Image 1 (cartoon, rainbow, N blue to C red):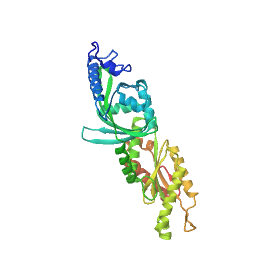
Image 2: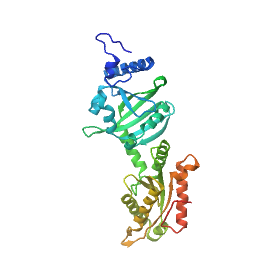
Image 3: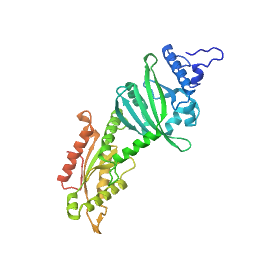
Image 4: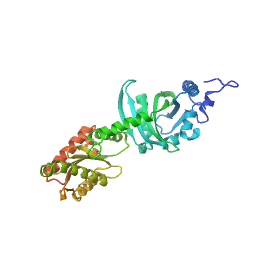
Length: 355
């Protein structure tokens, strides 16, 4: 630990009153490591650098996290006192991306973590982070003055077994311009030009993310829907492709107006669309029926002529596949597609959720 001689600044002084570890009761190995990191970070803050260093800690298998070191840059950014950092930081987050690394060179996964999940079971997420060893978060923060910025959080996780303590030794760097450019490119690539709905390319991310949430216990069930506009080829043949495009746009508008805020919808391809909803099979059936009835009850008009439109839906709940072992995005799509085919075979304009 740093010298406590007269006139000398100690690691405890730099850490502040929030340090639980340096207050005593932990192994010399943990205390020496923490003191060395605090000294290095305090030195880093004295130079002109865009890096914002910090050290966070938590006990294994517990939810409470605290900060062993928070520099002046971090406090100034959040506009709060040291004791308020954890709560203010969490409340400021409006978006978060998690990158896990198999090693220092290869990025293996990106996961979108919602604000609601931040308030959920963080212990499970931290367990995954601890196993990964090296992680990178990217946060979007809503700052007190109304400004929004993106921060990249790169951290190494060190586990001190005898103390049952994990240290996250990290630094924050602003990456607002980079993330805005990335999101713009993704928006161009992920959204259908005609209907303005998300494309099929984003569906894999939605399904895999929620399969992970199901595995971690963040959700208990979810439902995936495939929808196909009935007799769409006949519409194109009778009225032309311009009419077909107008029907697709109108269909997308009906889906937007019918879905709940938390439901996901998108265009799968051609006249096929998809839906996704957190909740039970029964909730999913209700979602599908709302969509089916809304389409059947809507008026689609082309060149002042009414065009009748109905939709068939194939639906699968994750709980229906749980007995088959590990669920995959491919299996969800395959089962929903099979049930969509059955809906067509049974006369169209219906929802099928078994078979």
